[in-house]
Amino acid sequence: MPEIPYITAADMEGKLTWRIVINALRDGHMKPRAVVRDAIINRGDDAFLSRLGWVDQTGFGVKAFSVFSGNAQKALPTVQGVMVLFDDLTGKPVAMIDGDLVTKWKTAADSALGASLLARPDSENLLVVGAGEVA
Image: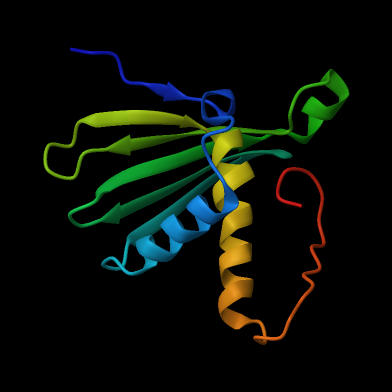
C-alpha cells in the first residue's frame, strides 16, 4: 500500500494565496452540509480535542489536536495537531495535513470569508483581534 502523504506548511509555501483559500471555502459551503461531531477529553489543564466531519460525495476527515499549556515553559507549541482526510467511496486515508497549515490558512480564511459576506459593501478596513497565526 502506498504511503499516505503528510502535507506540511512548508510543502505549501508559495502555492496558496488568500484568494485561492477563500474561494475554495466559498465553494465548499455550496456543497451538501457536512455532518460534524466534536469530542474533548481533559486531563487536568491539558486537553485532547477532535472534530469529525463528513461531506457526502466529497470525503470525510478528522482534525485532532492537543492543548498543553505547560509546553510554553518547555519552548514547545501549546497547540499541536493533525488532520486526516479519507476517500468518500472507499474509506481509504488519502492525506494527513499538519495542524499548523490548517490554522494558518483555513481558520483565518473562514474569518475573511465571513467578513466579505457580512460587511457593508463600502467597508475598507478589517479589525482582527487575536494573536498567533490566526491574527
